[in-house]
Amino acid sequence: MSERTSTSRARAERPTWVGIDPSKDEQGRAPLTRPRIVRAALRLVDEQGLPALTMRALATELKVSTMALYNHVRDKDELTDLMLDLMLGEVDCSPAEGDWFAQLRTLACSYHMALSAHTNLVRVYSTKIRLGPHSLMVMERVLGLLLEAGFSSADAADAFFALYTYIVGFHQMGRAAPLPNPTSHADGTVGYYTALPPEQVPSIMAVSRHLEGARRPGGFEYGLDVFLDGLQAQVRHR
Amino acid sequence: MSERTSTSRARAERPTWVGIDPSKDEQGRAPLTRPRIVRAALRLVDEQGLPALTMRALATELKVSTMALYNHVRDKDELTDLMLDLMLGEVDCSPAEGDWFAQLRTLACSYHMALSAHTNLVRVYSTKIRLGPHSLMVMERVLGLLLEAGFSSADAADAFFALYTYIVGFHQMGRAAPLPNPTSHADGTVGYYTALPPEQVPSIMAVSRHLEGARRPGGFEYGLDVFLDGLQAQVRHR
DNA sequence: ACCTGAACACCGTTCAAGT
DNA sequence: ACCTGAACACCGTTCAAGT
Image (cartoon, rainbow over all chains, first blue to last red):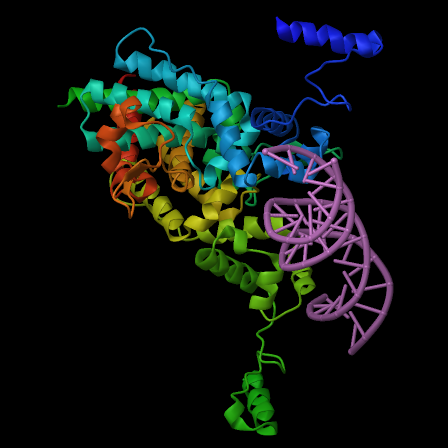
C-alpha cells in the first residue's frame, strides 16, 4: 500500500504521459538484478543463437555498460550455469499418474519439451557444468523412480546417465544431423551433400528421405520408447 | 631412383651431420599439406583440449605463419570437419561375425572407442557439421544392418539417429557429469557440490557414489545394451 | 555497493605484399 | 602457387576511477 502511495507521488512530479515507474531509474531502466540478467541472456540465445551471447551484446540489450554485469555475475561460465538452471525450471517435476514406467516417460517428455523450447542453449551441456537446484530436482525425481522400480544403486546410476545422455544428446545432434538428401540445382543437375557417390551408400539412399535428425516428428519418442522398453525388460528379467 | 640421386647430391652439398632431408625445406620443415595440418590439429586437441585449438597455436606448432594454413584449409570450420573425419577413420567398418544384432553391437563399440581416444574433439558434434567419407561409411554400415534386420526405412532412420545420439552424447555429457559426491574439507566439515541440502535429494545421496558420468567403467555398455535390447524386442514384436 | 570507460591479451580472418 | 606480416573487427576480463 505504501508503495502504491509513493508511486502516485512520483507520478505527480512528472508529466503523466511519460509513464514514470518508480522501479525504474531516470533513464527508464529497470534495476539490474541477477534474475533479470539471466532472463535477458536466455531470451537473447533463444532468438539469436548461442554465439550471439557476448557480454557486450547482453549489456547493450539491458542498456547498461558491459562491466555492470560483472557486479551480479562472476563470469560468463556462471552466467550459462544460471541460464541452464532457469531453463530446467520449466521441467514439470510434480508427481504424475501411473507406475514408475509411465511417470518416467512423462518426466522424460517434459525434459524434452523444455530443451525443445531452448534448443540453442543445449550445446552448453558439452562444457563443464555446475548443477543448480532445478537440475538436481529433476535428477532426484528420475533416480527416485528408478530405485522405486527396483534398480540397484549402481544400475540406477547407469540407467539415469544413459537416459540423460539420450534426451540431451538428441538436441545436440540436431545440428549435426546428416543431410544426405538429394538437392536439385537450378541447372537441372542433382547434387548430393554426401562426400561419396550414391552407389557406394545404397542404404543411406534408401532411407535418405527420413534422415532429418532432430527435426523428424516422433523421432524423439521412437528412441525414448526403445530405451524405456529395454529398461522395463531389465526389471522383468530379475 | 632419380629422386634418390638428387637426394645424395643435395647431401653432398651440405655437411652430412645436419641430417638433411630433401623432403624438408631449408628450415627443416616438412612441406605443409592438408593431411599434415589436420593430423597436427587433432594431436593438439587431444593433448590440450578443444579451446587450445586456435589457428595461431596450430601454426606455431607447425612452425609456419598463421596465414599459411589458409592456403590449405578454407576456415576453421572446414578444419574441424576434416578432423572429425580423420577420427572416424579409426572406426572399424569391416563386416564382423554374427547376426545383425552382434554386428551392430561391435560397430557401436568400435565407434565408442574412436570417440574415447579423442574425447576432447567430441563436442564439435554440437556444431553444424558436414559429413565426410568416413562418417558416411559408418552410417552406411549401421543403416545396412538395420534394413537387413527388417526395419522399415522410417524406423531404420529413427533407430539410427537414436543410437548415434546415445553413442556421441555419452561422451559429450562426460564433462557435464553430475558430481554431487560429498567432499570433506580440510577443516573436517563435509561439503556437497549440490545446490540443495542432502535431505532434499535422498535418492541422489543413495546412489551418489556411482554417479561418475562417462568415467564410470561399463557405463557405456550398460546403456548400449538397454537400447539394443529394446531394438531387438521391436523386431520380435512384428 | 554499484556503475563506467579505457586498456590488455587474446580470437578468426582480410588484405596487400612478397617469392 | 604458396607464404608472410600488418591490420581489422571482434572476444572476456582486469583495473582505476567515478557515484
